[in-house]
Image (cartoon, rainbow, N blue to C red; front, side):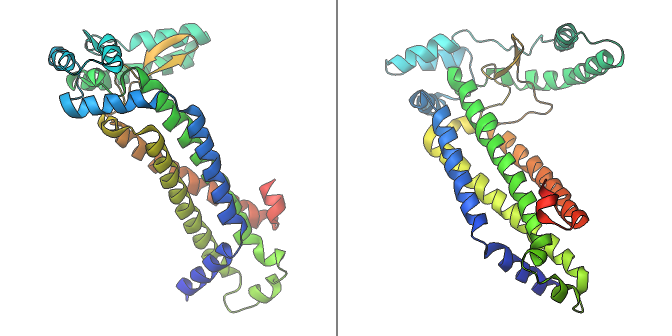
Length: 298
């Protein structure tokens, strides 16, 4: 009986045109975002081809193999960006990060101690990255930062925010649709009664999750078609070409565990799925407490 109720609630959700239309509009918006953040993708494709031919780890052997490739403007640019590269994590001390944040934000007391403790723990991760020569990963060379920003800061952020909004909307509509259609007295007076809300919660959560995965898959497909990262997917996220800016200071992108670009994307989507389900739960609870989908959204 519970499965039949969930299936019925799923049909009610997806019989509403606004959800498929919302998904389509989100995808169109994401395409525009990715297109707007893309440039010099031909160089990214060239670096990917070089990685497949001579490998993706910089060093003396890489420099020699790269110099033997046919002369081109992209090859000369890549040589200039990678010649004599060294492992930046070999002698890297994470205390300089904590010192920087303490100085920038004028931290004292418990706040300063917390950031110092966090950076001390990060030193072990730096040792692991140094042992794997993670900073010598070629990634997309000089286009690594724009590529990562297009995927993680532009595309992923948009997908996550859209998924959260969709989860809340589905939760609110599912728990409040009987009142909107004026069938609540009929539905709640049945044998199942208000226990139907369990089926509504399951159906709306499942719909939100599937919608999010479809939207994420479609957006990433667009990203791949436009940027064509190829072999860059297997590059380390902690390549010396990947960094972030703290105020005006350039800091290496140090992860707590070694990640490839592909693995980091999977971890991001997995964690955001948990966030999406939390927002769905909050939306559903809000709808039940207010008894009104519109008030629950506000």
